[in-house]
Length: 280
Image (cartoon, rainbow, N blue to C red):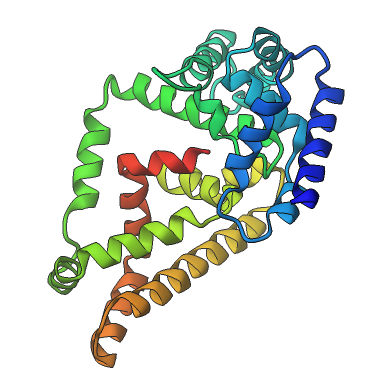
């Protein structure tokens, strides 16, 4: 306990040193940090990996503290034009993106904090803002081109249709266990991996465009994506093995179908409302 309290004090000190003008109480920040590491085995170790100054700012913004909102505007939202230039270089489009980000992530929801509270602190806040800005820009561009959400709705319906009779049968028979296992595998992904999946499978970015976004080579993105898919499959397989009593042939058949339809399953899962949790 003493080690955890010492880590919390250290995080608080870093945050206040970076943002001395922000009047965030130590108690509020400690509670916010505690939510980020709740349920983890090595709490003190996880506290040491958090980006303290970024988490301090995000916490204060989530509570609507004026000085924090001004700092976020100055440090992060001012970067939106450069972040979305590859999507649309016009200043009016950048203004629209920044306003959409303010409304979605900085305006408190009824009875709670704003959605910037979803920032986990496990990666730099600047990276979180960059991905949010690009995804917001892509969404606005799609809406402008399509003139509504009808195409999105039709796409979701198409993804929800059975792929083949055997898959349909097995998913109907083991739907609950399969969805829980697959959902748990997705939820366990680190922030970076979850964001890549959204950029690739929801926003339709190629590995070349994702590489440009992160400043890395396309081959690195390809290896990253393949590794994520392998981990999802391995985790789903492990959980299904624990949850279901199947013959060896039934289990092998189910896992083979999971593997063959992995991309479709990822897209379908990310399209569900519950997948909003992955935006953090």
